[in-house]
Amino acid sequence: MEERSVSHTRWPRRPVTTAVEVFRATVRYGGVTAVEDFTFSHSSGGVIGLIGPNGAGKTTLMNALSGVTPLTSGTIRVNGHDITSVGPVRTARLGVTRTFQNLQIFGSLTVLQNVMLPRTARSLSLSLGHVLGLASARRRIAVERRTAHELLERVGMAQYAHLSANSLAYGLQRRVEIARALAGDPALLLLDEPLAGLARAESTDLTSLFTDIAAEGVTVLLVEHDVAGVLSVSDRVVVLDHGRLLADGTSERIAADPAVRAAYLGEER
Ligand SMILES: Nc1ncnc2c1ncn2[C@@H]1O[C@H](COP(=O)(O)OP(=O)(O)OP(=O)(O)O)[C@@H](O)[C@H]1O
Image 1 (cartoon, rainbow, N blue to C red):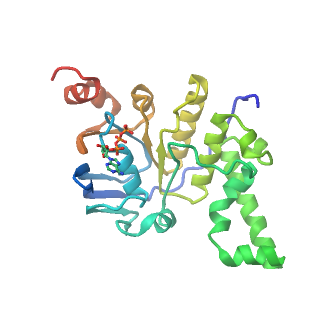
Image 2: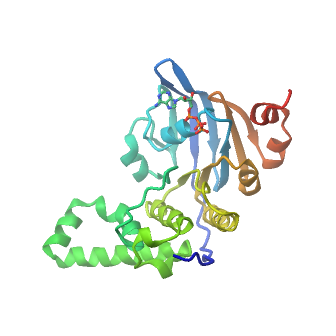
């Protein structure tokens, strides 16, 4: 299907309550230490770029933050909740949602159904009530449908609500995945290489959505190989190297940091 230019509405900033605290996080896979003694905290919204050379530990850290990969040691707290050992489902309920390196949407469902899924699928009574045609379930579904519509408006996708997800161009499918992650009302939104495979115009368009989401008070953690793209959008950039924190600062500081250039670009220190 032809890609149309997407405009998304700005939505009001809500009070910033996000607080992400990672304390001395270490993840080992057998003899391989993927993340080592990583400490980090962030108490406001904004876009945080997470970069580092191949094998630096970015995906592992993302997986640990979303409860998919357990820490070997250390702690993670989000909005004051200790999410270190609660697993991915509870982590999502406590405010950390994500998108995946390999796009994960349900192609045969409509865009709207994809976005409704996190909130409707979590309630067994709602699913049963819907099957049994109960009025209370019908009302709840109607509310969830409205909520999903609002989310689609926010990401500039309302006009695609009733199309099947697999009929959309790739860049728009990425937006569906982001809208679905927002349906969990996250404090921390993890985006794992959301720009991979996108043309430059689509990429620029999507990047401006990240800043809009962050302006609403959600902390957006962005893992991306396109370093220039990350530096251009991030309020803060964290650099990993061999599982360890190498640098942490504004884009300008990171771009000028000799240790980062050495590790990342293979330049002489
Ligand atoms: N399931 C696993 N079992 C064993 N080792 C792993 C596993 N996953 C990752 N590793 C190792 O942990 C280290 C960090 O990998 P990770 O994928 O987190 O890095 P990355 O920064 O995301 O890399 P890339 O940029 O290439 O995606 C690497 O040495 C990798 O080989």
